[in-house]
Length: 188
Image (tube, rainbow, N blue to C red; front, side, top):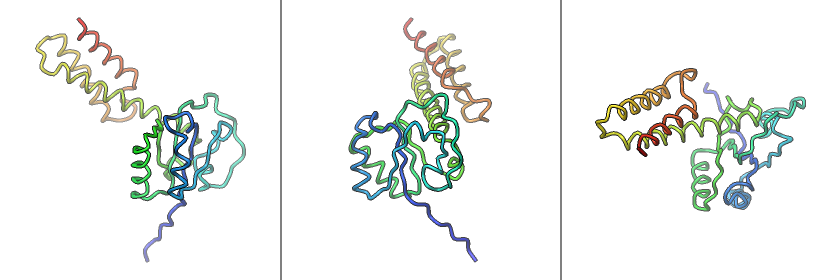
């Protein structure tokens, strides 16, 4: 007998969406798509993502996080691949830019919503730093200068550590610092 996986209800959790570029258009988009949503306020940030989505029972009230995330965020739960693709396509078409987007999973539904936003934002910043550094390294790829080659080696070593274990990975500050060193070299 095969196990039957019960699909979760579709829901979007929105935090500070009105502060995002064209974020005010989201509610109309959700209405058109018949997509349930919940507006998350700062007082809700100590609840788990699963509680806010209605996937878990409410637990006792917890302390508010010391540092509330300041960035607009959106957590998507229960959307099939095609529904998710459609939503993201329509958001692009309407030029809606929510900086932190995440999918609610069994792994992260137990996280406090504030912690989940902060973690995803940190990962996003790291990814952007990695992309910037890769583009900066490309500017030096044909150089024969030993100082430039040393900077390239330093950058590639840090980028290679991105593929490794989490405790060895560079953070955004390290990657940006190397990028600044290369930018300073280029300005000589």
